[in-house]
Length: 115
Length: 119
Image 1 (tube, rainbow over the protein chains, first blue to last red):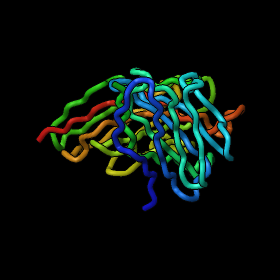
Image 2: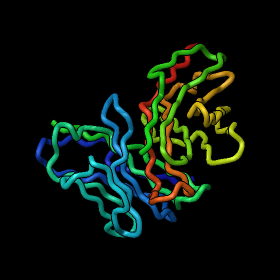
Image 3: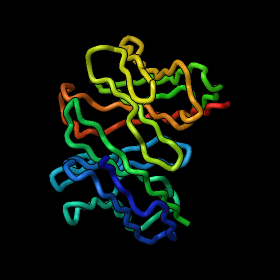
Image 4: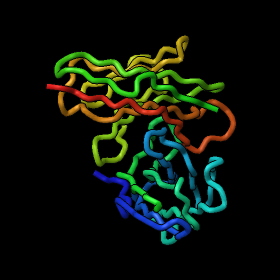
């Protein structure tokens, strides 16, 4: 069964460093998403990506965040200068479309710890 | 904008007992409703969804949910739980395709409910 793959599963970084979280969406999917879950809080939408551009983003997704689909298979989330409050589980998701018979498939998540 | 409230952060039950996980939502437009499950060290997996039609929807692993528009609820139920149902459950909504405006599939989640099934 096709699945969304995220790497690494756990990333520890020092405050102020840049991190790149990687995702390989399901191959025929067209819509890509990043969500995050701070420990003990809700899963929050960060950004959606379609046709090689950001289609929607939340207020959390400020200038320190960026997304890219560099090679047609990977979908990355970059945090330029990490802060302690960026520590969270980051989930990538993809969907084939937006119609009534499509659903978002989620990866296993990357746990980011900023120290 | 949409919001989702899961009324119970933790629900402990004994094996073979029935369970109900509660979810209420708020939205100014029509929405689709979802329940996702997260087993330890795994990603979010879709349990079931309500898009339109019959208000009682059945999902995987014997779960079902009922959409109640007047009460803006979408509670998840299972008549008899197993140890393997121990997981965190998330209710989520998404703007429907006929709601007007622009939607790119953004999901709004509740806080999650940890279901623990005891032997």
